[in-house]
Length: 542
Image (tube, rainbow, N blue to C red; front, top):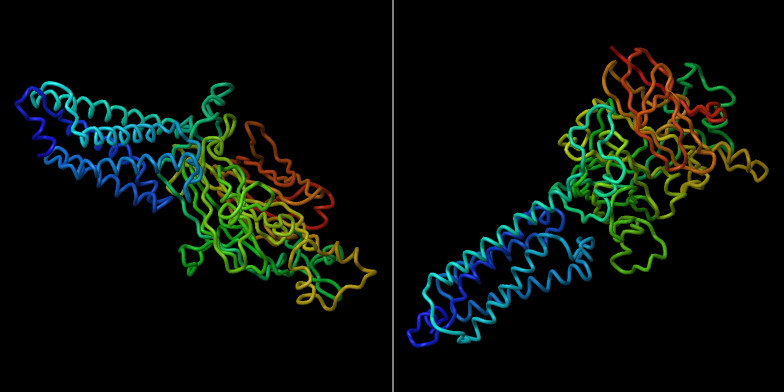
């Protein structure tokens, strides 16, 4: 005789009818998982599939418990609920593959509601299976009402939890446009970003990036494009190949984008973006997004992808050092030649624009296996994070017409892993020991996006459009740069200027509305860097 039948007994005592409370618990557990199933399917597919299986099981259990509450069905309910609670405890105590950031997040609103419903399901199932007699029989109406009340409370809690999580993901001032600043200041800002658990918007932006060897020419035109004349003796120090001199062509390792996980199709670079030169593909995200970088290394030395600014677990940091991690948390540190690794990064509020910034902020990513050698080999790329609610579908800010990315860096080819090979391949004989200082000087390439003496493709802008320049630097103590725009000026955090300051690994976002048509110089104002060719041009057209 099943539990429902026992509940109908006409003798002085009867079984309590648990089916409606059990069904309500199962439905609440289902509802608590629905808002996060989609994001998990994109970011950790195996977890998403498990959620789908749990939701299907909860739906079937709810229907079965109401219609035919057999003993085996109660046992199944007990097992499903116990496994779900165990998985939650495991994910919070130790983390799961691709979900290590859940570790320690015990107060996640939807997680709390889900585990409460699953625990209730287990307790009700255990109680029902023991067939304990608790008192006089009641009519069917009372247990039905109790079940409806439990369902209402559970669904209300689920709705509250989902709303709370969305609010936690909300990154503040929406509707900020142009070159204005955020609306939050002082304690309001810090109260918003401090200690909040990350809640995804549901968008995961996936990038396929490969580290590849390239024969890179710093001066492909063979002329000084700033003077419009052949290189002079000073420029020849850096660009002329000869005995003990490599010249302008070096083998480098660069990040290159692909459109597919099989790395069969390179991302096409539009003609107007060819000025990007040796920079890796632009990674974009909106606050609340997740970034997934599927990385392949085809260079002859171990490389990695290390991001600035965003939130990452230890297995997505891309930097080897004694950090008390091991095994799977080390696979990101050094990706061997021919190897692959998937990096997963979150974009919380603190990765987006601050209270005094505009609609987007710049970060960078680079290889950190041997950081000095890797970045001098060329493994550097830009990343942009846009304020939540202000991004186009591709992640770019809606209030900006054109974005420009420029890397000012004295790329030290003496520090490159390819130095010996470059000398053997491109120099006309090896340099002598007496010429060591001259040889090293010739390999200091004072470049803008990997070009010297104006050889960067000329960037074309339209008069009156809103242009955001993202300017950055890498290098050593000589990489103290002061990029200067001729003809137009910019604003940086509300201050108007035509020169910005850069230190190694510094990043600046500068807004321009060009009003002066013509072809203009854009160069580092440090004297030695001018002489060595750290100059380029941009054009403003009507």
